[in-house]
Image (tube, rainbow, N blue to C red; front, side):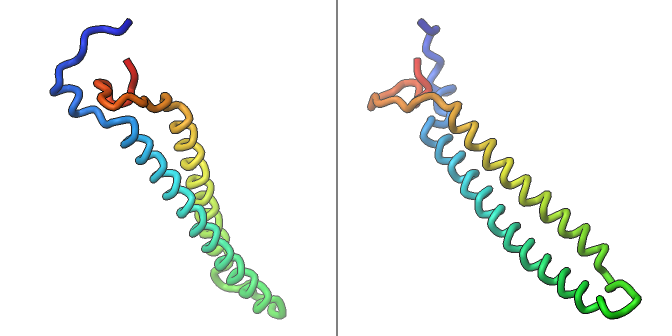
Amino acid sequence: AGGPMPPATLMTGVPSLAEIEGQIRARQRTALLGTFFAVLGLQAMVGLLVAKVFAAAGTLNPAPGVSLDVFTLLAVCNSALSHVISGGAAACQQGALPPPSTAYNDRFRGWGA
């Protein structure tokens, strides 16, 4: 079962399973925070866009900059969606990790034999 033990110099460059799990959790938190701020920005931008449209409702000319605001809303929606997708990808990566080792002196740093 398994092969020969790799040299110690190779094993020092491999991060432990706990370190990788911590990095994945940090990515999940970053994705959640990014989604939160993107949705917060969306709410503010939609409010401004609605105010511009209502302010120009009585005139024959459309409100200046409304079409640019719509494209900006699309960009922020894409940013929020990308944060949600990256958080889901990090959750899938975390689910694919092997169960942690309980051995104190694990030669393979949690990656199993």
